[in-house]
Structures are given as C-alpha cells and as structure tokens.
Amino acid sequence: MAEKFPALFKLASKGEIIPETNKEFDGAFRAKDLFEIQKIQNNISTMRGQIVTSSLNVESRLDDIIVNYFFSKHQKKKKYFIELFLEKEFLTFMQKWKILKDLLDFDALKLTEVRRKVLLKKLHEIIETRNSFAHGEIVFFRQKAYLEYLKSGKKNRVRLSKGYENKISVLFNQVIRLLDYLKYGSNFHSSIT
Image 1 (tube, rainbow, N blue to C red):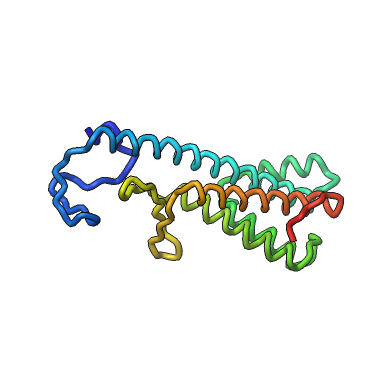
Image 2 (spheres, rainbow, N blue to C red; image 1 turned 90 degrees about the vertical axis):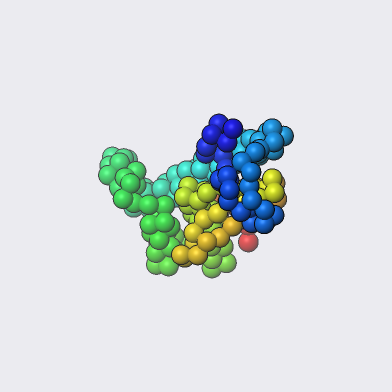
C-alpha cells in the first residue's frame, strides 16, 4: 500500500526498527494513518508552493532594485542586463543578496542602519527557507510533518505546523515591505523599524 504514496513520506521498510516505538515494523499501514498523512502532505504541498512563489516574488523585487540602481534611465540596457545576467542560472538568489549587501555597504542605496541589518538578515532567512524546502525532505513522525535539511553540514529538523507557516508568512511580508521601501524610497510607508 505504501507504493501509492512514494514521495509522500519516508517510512520504515518491513522488518526495520521504528525508533519511536523500538518495535519491528510489520509492513502494515492503517487506512486512517494514510489518510491523515495524505491530508498533511496536501497542506505541506500548498505551503511549499507558497514559499517557492513568495521567494520568486522577493527575488523579482531584488532584481528590480539591482537593475534600477545600474540602469534607472536606460530601458534597453535594463532589458539586456536582466536577460544576460539576472535571469541566468549562474546568478543565484544568494549572489543577488550579496550584490544588495555590497550596494548597501557602499552606501549606494540609502537605508538606515537598523533597516539595513533587518533586511539583510531576514532576506537571508528567506533564502535559507527556500533552499531548505527545495533541497530538504519531508518526514513524518507520529503523524506530524517535519522538514529535514542540511545547514552548514549539519542535519536540521523543523516541525511544519500552522505556527511555522504563520512565522514564514510574516517573514516574507516584512522583507517585501522593506524591499518596496528601498525601491520606492521614503514615499513608501513602512512600519518596519
């Protein structure tokens, strides 16, 4: 029965020891368990999609800030720069973060020190969150979902709960507001420090 859900969860094979019970797994799954896991998986798929979509939205805003800094009045150069550099796979989200950091460090883009630190830190968190979902693995333990991923060579695990989803949503909203503030200047109202 587990073959119907190959990508849904990491489970023990028949005969393996299940860590939380210290008992040998007999290979049987209850329909109720599979239904619950499938329901959780559907919610996680939605969350994963929202994180990827929101990350692309943030990255697009970051692209706008970078290209407008270098080519604010040259539409043709903007277009070429976007096509030749920003949209290519060799320029990653993290590298764009580094370009933004350098522009802020060089004082080429105006932002208060507090906002600068908050933006860079939270933008970095978004990149790490996006990467953990893109490269991590969803696992289930006692009908709860977790995301397992590597960070600095160490295995990490975070519970995928409604609270986690809300925390990530707030993070994205804060970064989007700060990037909009940076793009549109002081004419844009932001309550972020």
